[in-house]
Image (cartoon, rainbow, N blue to C red; front, top):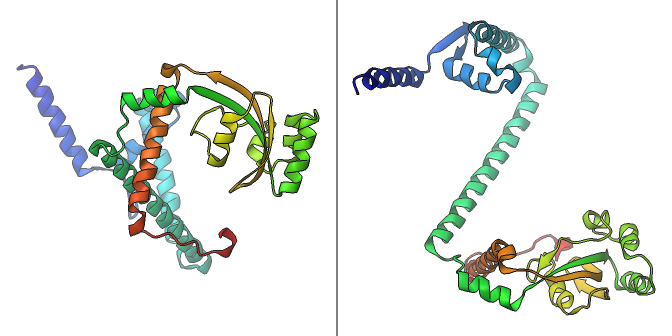
Length: 272
């Protein structure tokens, strides 16, 4: 214990010094503080960390920071800060930073609100719920789709696919969904309820493997579908996915209950 006390005293003393943020160097009116030095030092590439940890390396690194401060001091003393172009770009930079700060605040607020809902039990998903969902929907499906702007085009492409034309080729050449079109219209394998296009899930569930269906209307447009795979999945294989799915459903119901307080109005005509 006696050996530990001097060590603790030294540690507290060092912490106190860091709390005052001692000055390492000065360049005219500018300062390089210990915290800035350590922060910059931590940004050095891993390959050079062992070198900058040596006395010579630390001194050379300080010389680099001094040079940067010298450049900054010279720039501050020039006519640039008074120029119109600088002020315009500075105002733009501040506006962008304020926007990023607002987005960061909104993200933090949303994340903490969701965490509170979870801790309060509003989004709690029980094991019985997961088992019941898997019992009702034990199948995972793989589907390709072609997204079209009109039912006429979707009907025509559906006929070609049913006549034997390669569905993947049709999707690559015609689908408006660029992300899936690049992979021949393939959508992510999904359980019932996981698809981002809810209008399709009941239809997909009833389709036979190999069957082509469409046109099917959704909010995105008109779809031609081909069901390629349907397989039963074990509960433990998809437990986490079902839990996330059920939590999302509970969150959706919660949002519906509070939406009366926050009425939604789409103002832009192109989105109505």
